Amino acid sequence: MKKYFLNLILVISPLLLFSQKKQVDVMTYEQTQDINYFINIKNNTKLNEYITINGNSVKLGDTLFIGNPTSSSSFSTSYGNAYATQYGAALSSSTRATNRREFEFIQMGRPAGFGSILAASGGQGPTMAGIQYKNEKVRVEEMKVYHKGSKKKPLNVLIILGEINGRAFGINKYMTVQNTEFAIESGELFLLNRKMTRDEALVKLKEAKELYDLDLMSKDEYEKLRTELAPIITSKWNNEFKKRINSATTYILKP
Image (cartoon, rainbow, N blue to C red; front, top):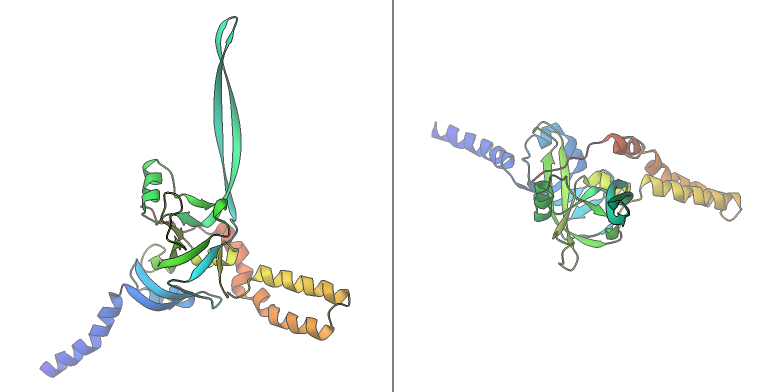
């Protein structure tokens, strides 16, 4: 009987350890979508490395670059001015509308950091990074996963970014990439030695076609490049991305 229970414990222990694991060495995009895998992963589980759907690797300590913002917001400011007339004081006012380009998937601060708490206390939503951070060199400080709802929902990968020299981004020490896959594919976040995106592949192929039509590239060179780029352009993920990015609800963690 004792031997039976000992064997049972040896079988169950790894499963219990896995279900309680709060750090994973490597996780792939496919695993974040596989219910047989992600149902055993708890919110706030940390990653050492993440492999994107296109096979790009993101590791702790990696140097990345902030790309181009893909969203914008607008706000209005009213100005008042008092002046004197023959009938007494009068007040005039004017309103100026301002458009601000900002990032769709990169938030200032940690999900529950100081800057986020200040914004929440003022009745505001998360502050997204502005265009001033375009081309900023950043470092991967931390990676975490959260379920998009209950534990039966797929995982979302968050990346915490720090300034490359340890300085702060204004009042925020960090930035948070709220949706890693969309941030990379949209060009808001650039990985070093990353694989080419669909838009980049299309541009390169169109340029090659122009050179071919001008007899500045041979048919063999063009066909070789076309064969190399075709899988990137026709991949299921890349074809669906434009539709999904317009309708997707970014999973924002509130403090």
